[in-house]
Amino acid sequence: MGNPAPGQPSQQDWILGDTDAIIQLLACDKLSLLKVLRSQYGILTVIPEPVEIELRNLVKNRRFQDVHQRLTKAFNNGLLTILQEAALSPLVGVNTHEAFERIERLGEKFRRLGVGSGEAYAHAAGIELSLPVLSNDGKAINVLMAY
Image (tube, rainbow, N blue to C red; front, side):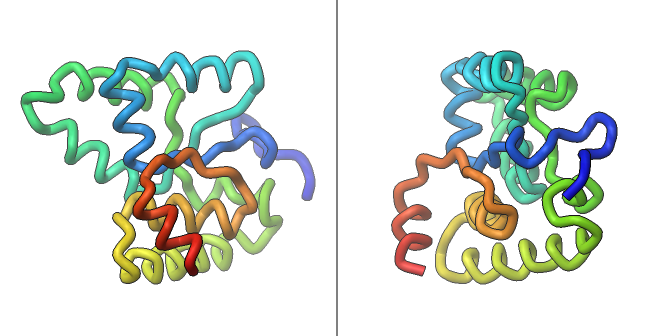
């Protein structure tokens, strides 16, 4: 599939994160686990846009003031990266738009099955891109395993 674009990780360097797993890492101040994956193994944590939206909405609550700061820092230092169509070329070749559309359609299908939006799109991207998904949402996993 060729070399990744400058600054973009290759396929074996990605793990997708869902909302539940990332918010728990943030709340427990355990983002150091993602730092280890990145620094020692070159694995970048990538999240679909619906995960980003859910995370940003969750941390608006005053109870999560410290979590909000951690999330902002994680985005600013590249610890969390938002999945974008242009970044898919190392994974799918030239058909990035088609792959991104398939992720969108499958994510919507999973969401209609009762899976949270972030989890639905993270797992859809995992399936479409053959990538692992960092998830601990038991309900979502059970629904998707039955799919």
